[in-house]
Image (tube, rainbow, N blue to C red):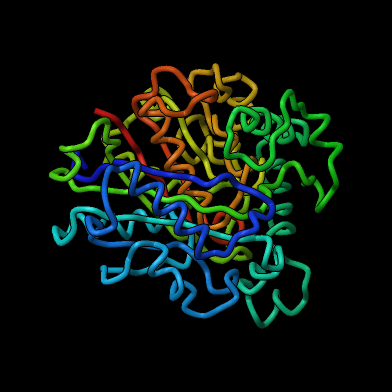
Length: 380
């Protein structure tokens, strides 16, 4: 995909435990900021995609009251019931159809008004898993972590060190909810235990927040300074959590491989300058290194120990702090796209990495990263 669709502007609200505003006002602020950053008006939008979820919003047709705040009154409008990264795919296909030139995608969530892991339990098999109340997003992730640790020889200390890296990076990100400057593995391991081997600081903290991106066709993007081009995209959906191996991210690898073919990436470890990974739990970042082709299978711990993924490493991962810094569900992956675009444009401020020309952004949804999507982004 050579310079067909670009990201031309973006906006994030600070991620907070409780931002004390209505969902409508939150979406309005993110939308307005993104449109203004693009130098556009609401009337310039051709199509709008929202990313939100009926369970978490507590109402059916959860986008019905977001039409006006998202700028989509009398516009072509729809939504995805998953992360905003999939909303970007939806908008991408609409632009590539030739029917639209300017698209806006907004993702939002308010964890302060819904019941934590309870909505996720509704994704489980209703005849067995849901009834027994043993399996949930966190307990399933603990099984995933244990399976990966046994297969790859990774220790709890290494997983904790991943969390410490991201929390330290998050201290440089003004939008992050959770940060811990100078964090180390000991502090992470000493945090509240959840399901072994997972502790609280190894998990992405649910919060309130919204973010938005403005996308444009090549024709419309030609008028914009520093467009960030979508060079490739790939996505894949895996089997149900109890029907697949948990020691690897199979669907992420399939998504990455498809994306790289489209973007002309043959050696990700040398051709990618930075990655923003949607890690709901710290161990998933290690697994993502392998699935994204940054290292060989079962070598995620070794690759991390080399220092390659630190801010000053050869392939920084989650310079923003990643999802461990803030997890406004349905906006978390979209924030990874925004953060990658910020790095390419040199807009990342204190967590800016030098020389970023090509970046990977990853989004996921479902228990144990059941569904994954990968983008390769690049500048001029």
